[in-house]
Image (cartoon, rainbow, N blue to C red; front, side, top):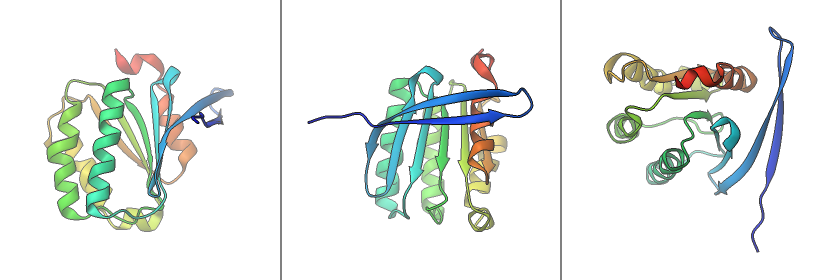
Length: 164
């Protein structure tokens, strides 16, 4: 038996006075994360449920990357508030093996962190490398947020001109 789980998120844009809905459909779920997407907005949401081992982290990020590329979902929100950190070898793997797979694509990643998670500096290091070292010609944006609504607004607030 197969079924589709749907979540509808409603966000309020105070500056424009607009309400926008995000219609998420479950892609898959494990004990470590939930992966959902909104195909009409080319939006992917990844919610980590707990800290993965290095092997699980790499497997899941590889799966998510393949899904994003296959379905052309280049606006991605990673809710990592329940994932404590990314170890240094996994950070290097991410920068060496995963981020380059998006070369030539207009990509926007938003990471939702806790204050404690930001203090770990792992996502700051990745953000710095993406912005300054990987030379992705301004086509790969990665920002950090504490508030998921602000992250979603940043991801979806630029409309289709983001892809031009």
